[in-house]
Image (cartoon, rainbow, N blue to C red; front, side, top):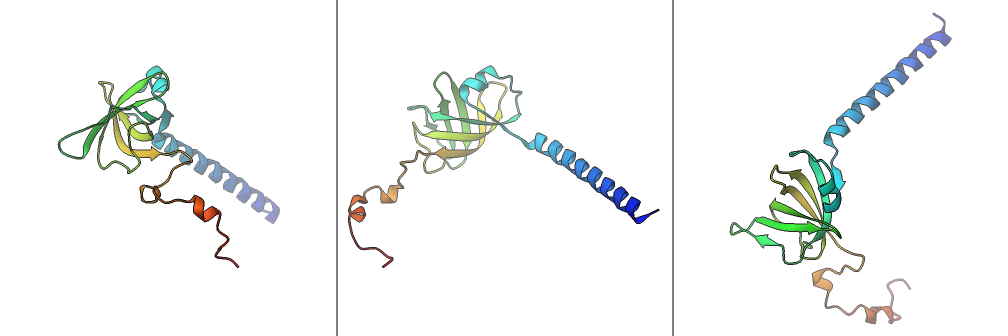
Length: 149
């Protein structure tokens, strides 16, 4: 076989291998993907119990109930039109409070309760850590002292 034909065959084999690897990666990601739902879209969707999903919304004020064991918690995630009951067992993030945003990874139980495996608390762009809440940052804006001279 001529060297030109050998390079062409090698290029075709490499292209087929690349396409095959892409299909294998896509199939693996499809099994591990978790779709994002708000309480409204979750209420309308036909989600099978046990299917991995991600639920996001606001923690409804007055809905957080902590169990006596200290690590189990239940609360309600809401958006404008719907609400979803959530159960979680674990340590909650520091920013997890009533009225704050939350994203929970988990699965639906057959009884309609969302069982969260992990919680991510969201904050707005005006977030200030608790440790820095009482510091007056306006005084630093008006000083002429800088690190770079």
